[in-house]
Amino acid sequence: MTQTVKNEGNGAGSARGLPLKGFGLLTSLLLAFASAFFTFFASTAVAIFSLLGWNLIGHHAVNYANSYLWVGLPAGLLVLAVALPVFAVLWVRAKIRG
Image (cartoon, rainbow, N blue to C red):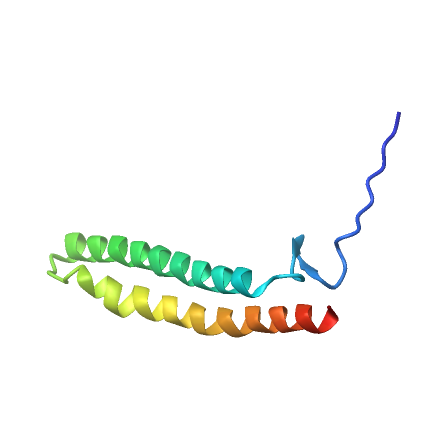
């Protein structure tokens, strides 16, 4: 027997299969802060390993705490500054459409 699957969720309210409509306020805030949190730690990890290579190969003595201050924090704040308006617009659209 052959079964067919209806593909109902791939309209204008999705991006790469992820639904982008119907987010509540708490969900929107959680997604915005989670994306900033992930970006902070991912960019900090890359910066720490880069400083490790820089210090080992070049015999430098750069402090690893600089990776938090100069890489992780600006990256996290930048993503938060972009994600909050994006998810706020999605939330407002969901409220307007009812």
